[in-house]
Image (cartoon, rainbow, N blue to C red; front, side, top):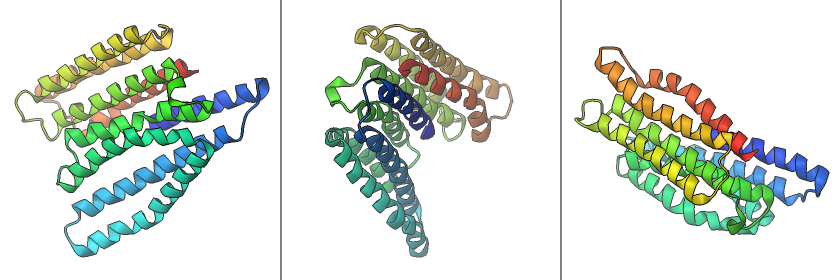
Length: 262
């Protein structure tokens, strides 16, 4: 969830840089903005993770121990954020998106619900936002000039990774909750429908990668039914096993998104 959008954004940005360098030229601002954005994102996430540990700590000693990384990661994230704004000031607009999403995650964490659906989906949506953010940074354009391919790629990854949240819950914390598996399947079906509708409404060219994105979401819907069904027949499905079986879909989602943005 954390790595895939960053990998997609990095690969497609580097490809764009090489193309631009040999055709129209390349400003130093674009690579700097992309690099600083990645730094801000990763160290911001490390800071956020440390905050979640502080929130869950039961003793003052552990709270102080968990707080130490914040003083290391936080300033690096903040400095990287300043560099981002120097290289591309228009990127400040993304604070309007990341702010509410991370506020939800922090609210849930400090109220003792770090693994809630709201927390998981909000961090997933924030992670997927790296796609249009890095596209905007690499192309050094304004918010309104972000390409349709970047937006549809964001929608795809946001829907796919958001679906993994109820899937894992249906197999672990909510496995004995009546109707939760059905809810998970409905969320996956809704994700596929939303993606198809967004593709049609946006006017994006229906290329092979876009079709494969729909296939990935369809496979995700199938496994949302099959894994709980298999578990109901007596087979053991731990969170670790679910994660391992999810790896091929994650790789496929990453590759088709790179192809869509190529």
